[in-house]
Image 1: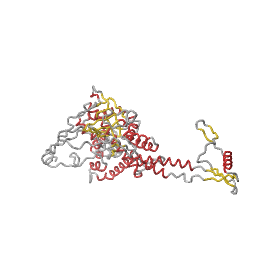
Image 2: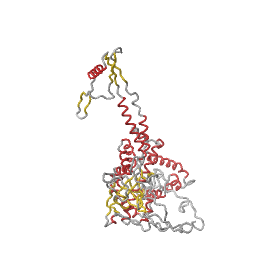
Image 3: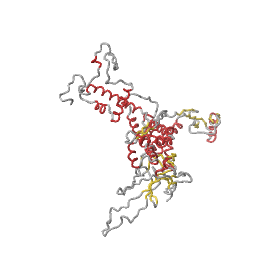
Image 4: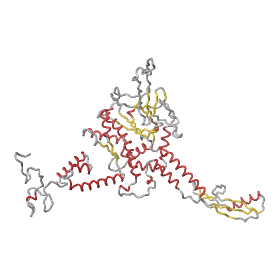
Length: 559
């Protein structure tokens, strides 16, 4: 077998005994399947009969991104997903749901910050996310010091998606296992199934698509990279018929072709039908045919004036030797007719109709999951109630959220490698931690802000209405949990912050003594205000307080 470049992080308990399946791993990530003795499938994808391989498809996506309408839609998506701010990073790691010590959380945050520095994510976040969206996949080579792997990742190098493929290779099977038959032709040991072994690696072909590289499907061609040495993230869209990873732009291939074709045809129609043309009827009398034609040409050259503009020199010149379909018509007329006559042909009448173009533009935006209202870009920015937000904007916001979730898988891959190499966690610990690590992206969608503001306002209004009934029908805890929707962590956090602010004098203590005349908190040891009674200066006490005035302890002591 050819040498595998890179490194591998081995897990001794990766395949525990008894946990076996005859079904090979799913290729929902769009990997190619090979057999050890040859190629399992066909590398000729033939998608819509236009693309020979995955490289052609990626190049098609990149060509589409150069079209103005596609570029505008892509920019809307990327700007919504990656918010650039001068103060904050585009993404932060969120560990509030992770059940780990503060020391581990601090290390995880530092390592994530280190990974973002390797990617230069603060400056290149827009470019990275755009490349991932267009190509439908993103690859980075994790470079480490082979002599000191405990130092972690030293460099993250971008790999062109058109030059690398994820391969699952099925090893040869022992055909003797499970093939022992009894006298009746039945398997002597039905449980003795030869479970397939799968080898996973990346195949890097620097010359893919060039004159030297070609498009061959030889599984041994190229440089093999280990699975752990490459961080990759796909779009999550898979053609289940062909097992190929698609880009989010794949649905827009046909609408874009239709839009380009209809625009080209419109330009041709307008160029040929827009100008007004004239018909010159020249009276040739009884001249013979040859002389009549000569006379017609002489008249045409005498009155014909074709001024053309030379874009190379910037000069105007008279060029009479060319004639196009948009120029005037010269027709002979025999004696007995109406003599010389000039008639004007009208130009096209419906040149301002672009309904079909608008239709295909909207269709293109729908294919890219961008609201149609963003096509013009001239509408005002409404900051009204969230009920005024269009449903398309809500769908677009959810679509961007799903893409962020999918894109975050790349951070998880890099963070896993970094923590395992530095022996911060074990593979078993990471399997638990990965489900509780989240990534908080900056968000400036006005719909989300308006919705959150309205929800907070309504909750505070409900809490104000329920205030007279607290202690009678509702408890304070019920109001905080069910009306204000505060979690256990938020309740503890807010209680600690309120206590700290009271100690610092930021807010008054609600249980402190209050001067009834001024309404200000009374200072202990100071004389009361004029007119104030000593009883009024005391803090309110609970009837259950044994020290409260007016309460009597029952016989036998305090219960």
